[in-house]
Length: 80
Image (cartoon, rainbow, N blue to C red; front, side, top):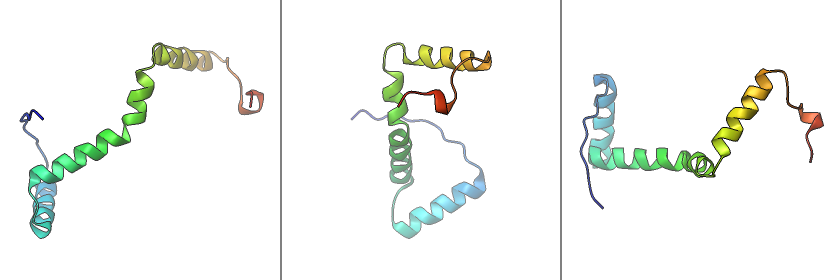
């Protein structure tokens, strides 16, 4: 896997805590931030899959506009 580099700016108090945890767990900051980014990506995987459906985002936006305009259905009116 190709690796890239970036600068991450964190408040000193948070960085101090993360470093303390990394030291306690005998892990590197890279290991911790890799784990955190993996978890973040996984939490958003379903959203990314939905957005990959052609026309899905446009349909959602149209639905929101319909609701804003007073249209749409309430929960009781929805089909099962």
